Image 1 (cartoon, rainbow, N blue to C red):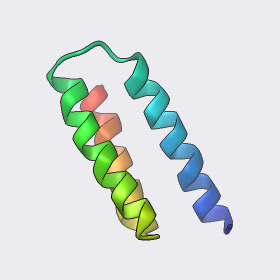
Image 2: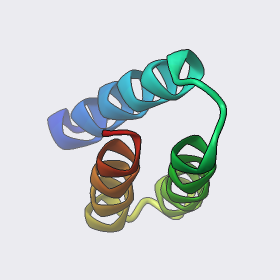
Image 3: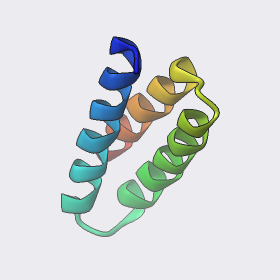
Image 4: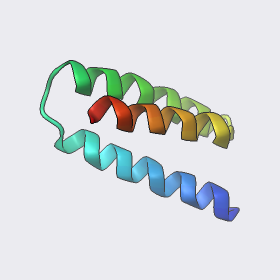
Amino acid sequence: MTPEQNTTTEKMKSVKAAWDKAPSGPKKDAALKHYQAAEKAHTAKNDAETNKELEAATQALA
C-alpha cells in the first residue's frame, strides 16, 4: 500500500467516525451519499475522486 493510499484509508475511517457521531438529519444524509461515492472510488483505486468525495462529506457534516 502506498503512503497516499494509507492516508486515504485513514481519511475514510475519520469521516466514517464523524458520520457515525453526527445527529440524524439532512446533513447526515448528504454526507452519507458522498461517503458512499468515496467508497466506490476507493474500490476503483481512484484516490483523487475518493479524497474529493471525503472532503464533500466532511463539508456536508459541518
